[in-house]
Amino acid sequence: MFTTVATILAASATVVSAAAVPINNTPRGLSGSASVTPHVQYSSSIGVLGCKINTDRVAYWPGSVNCDDICVKVSHGGRSLHLLRVDSSAGAYDISYDAWNYLAHGTSARDDPQMGGGVPMDYRYVDPSECADLLDEGGKLPLSAANSMNYVASCLDNGSWAGKNHVLYNIANPTCTIGHNEKCSLDLAVSNQPDCPSGLGTGGVLKGNQVKNIEYGTGEVTVAL
Figure 1 (cartoon, rainbow, N blue to C red):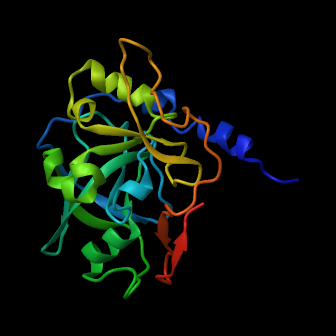
Figure 2 (figure 1 turned 30 degrees about the horizontal axis):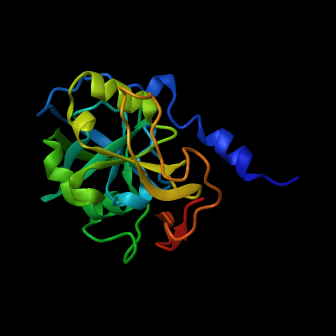
């Protein structure tokens, strides 16, 4: 049995679930400490496209991703990094493996991969502008036109940062393997669906926009599926 593109598209439609609808319950400037662990496979519960961001700088934090507080500054041992909070976890404070490796050990996971569990780190939510260099498109949040509309609609309703600073692409999944690398427009006065040059959700296999993961313990760079 083989997996068709249609099957993959159907599966990708679950990227944004009801649980991913944002709740603005994280006040700007909130800080704390947590035992932070490494995360290898890129994902995003709100449909942020990995081919349009720095996937080595992502926070996979507990709770829903909201519309304003997507940038968190994490510090340890005199080192700090800004991370995009674009995915949720069941309870663990995960961050990209490369970010964990640098904060915990002072080196990139590509050059000197380390292994281990939770490391005590401090964090603070900061203004999204502080994560602008992690985003393409002049600091705007790149989202899947087909699978991010629950998130976008909620953020548009509350006049939030994400509501005002996002770009929609006709790419069906966060690892950018399905769709067309084209921007879509949204006019809610006309339709609640984005308008894409090639037709919303019509893309097949997308090439040339690979998302890379760094393998745990080896530092080998692999293509995300």
